[in-house]
Image 1 (cartoon, rainbow, N blue to C red):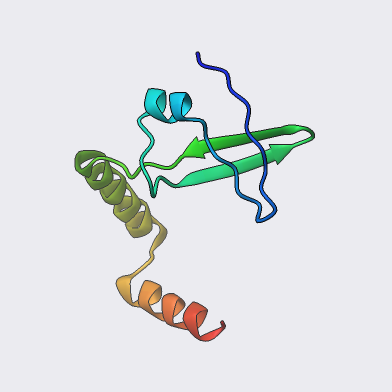
Image 2 (image 1 turned 30 degrees about the vertical axis):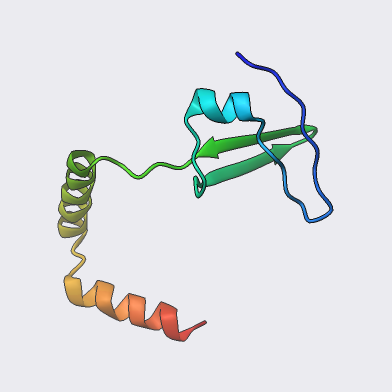
Length: 86
């Protein structure tokens, strides 16, 4: 595993060293979740699920919503309310 150092810029930016970017196949625009605790900062890449996995997640969510008695009209109303609350 490559080890390298980097610095925080005055604008709060951190450069991920090239050997690490190459090893992890990171491209411009890659999104991360950032977690900080004590003196540790963790960057975890965010990747969308594959189509098949997304279809399974969607089917499961729909099934659970049906079991809970949630209707499409309920979701539409709640989204409208949430957007107007901004």
